[in-house]
Image 1 (cartoon, rainbow, N blue to C red):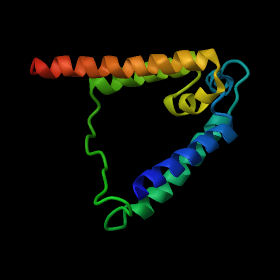
Image 2: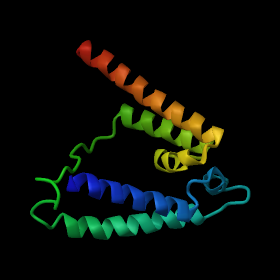
Image 3: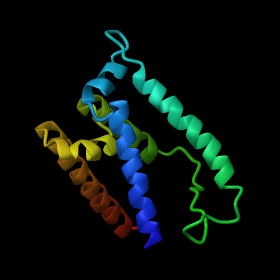
Image 4: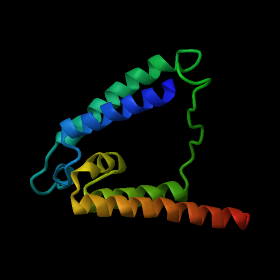
Length: 143
């Protein structure tokens, strides 16, 4: 139960932070990506703040013997750059640039009821299901 409570409050804090920073507004993202027009650097400052907090927190937390709410750390070990990573990154970037959302801010903005947010979220969910279907198809063929 305490893990669910911690997850809820972490997600709540993340959502509030996205809202306060204006990252739930596609115009902010589009303004950041418009480097030849009226560029808005505020997203860069949000990213730099997140990187700073993560780099300090990660080093402090991983010095512990184990996490507080679970038995062990789950740190990714895969370090290779493969075609799936490159293709996924390109799809993510295209969706981000065209829609002005990435998954976190889109979920936070879902409560707004704005049709473009709902279309983005529906597309994102469909993409997750397509990915699962494709992976299961390839895994069942042994590739």
